[in-house]
Image 1: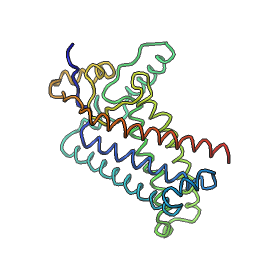
Image 2: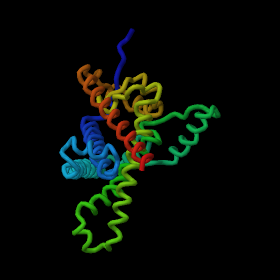
Image 3: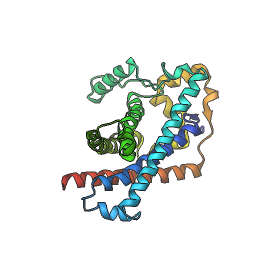
Image 4: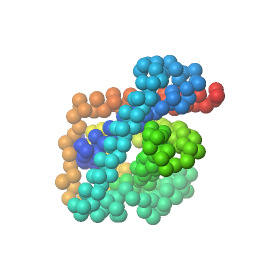
Length: 271
């Protein structure tokens, strides 16, 4: 039996950005929840693990700084690639920009869920992956913007009325809860809990995916790769040590995310 071939899906820079993104996100959630639900029975013991509420606040701002740094780096890299002439990033079959086809794919997918039509053929990025991607931009504006207002109130008070900070406090907390809930229930499921992916999709950790799997899941992009020369996109199999580390890191991330979601549910029901 022939050895499976692998395709390069993500480079080292994309994988490093994803790692920094989910570390900062889970760190923000783990340090923000005890502050938001400070009257919950689990809040004080959770904060005391790292030294109390004061230290929790410092860690929260530290993770926020990391997230802002990743976001700024990502946006700067986008502009750098555009200046180098990579216009396909903005439109086309390999772009993350939502396009009319994504609406058709969503509708076809919903019909497939209820056995009313065939499963749509997807390209490099599916409609739900594009939603996940752009949700980060929304979160940085809403959650990040309100967080900066609460972090530097003296500066923003120079040109904003006082009531805006009450709104910022409400928006920051509620939008953060929404983000944690979405990541754990929707993103984790789409990425790791689907039957053919369970218990974990390692592509974002290893950067490679099996050729037969990619051809089955994303036939449109596989056809694009074939037309442009498939050999140029082949990659060596993932290192077994990297796979083990990826499973460990990914498993811890999923366990932390699910645990935080359970704490949100418990705190919400016992308020």
